[in-house]
Image 1 (cartoon, rainbow, N blue to C red):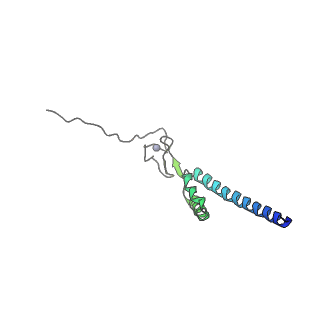
Image 2: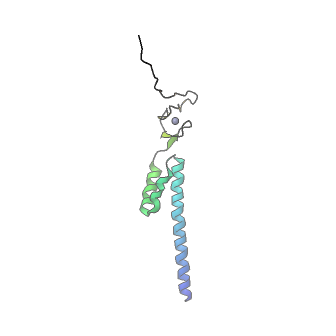
Image 3: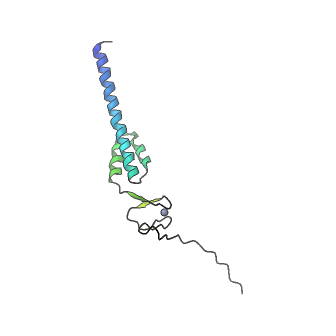
Length: 110
Ligand SMILES: [Zn+2]
């Protein structure tokens, strides 16, 4: 093996390592953006394909953030005043509006 071959191999290895580091760094960036916006980080599985990485990063950066309910941990739109799942009031956390529970009314007997 000549010295030129060794240098070429080392250069190719360095290029591959830099490419993988940038690729994984972009995936980590996408997961970080998703978590900051309360979106599912599992969307970044599309990043297995380089085109999927590009599209998922653009979509994730342009999506609006979601608000997580402190009562039931479900996510809803940022502008929502009440949690659609449990009725938690985001504007006044003390004023809890519980869901309407069905009430059984026994039939009247005369
Ligand atoms: Zn809730």
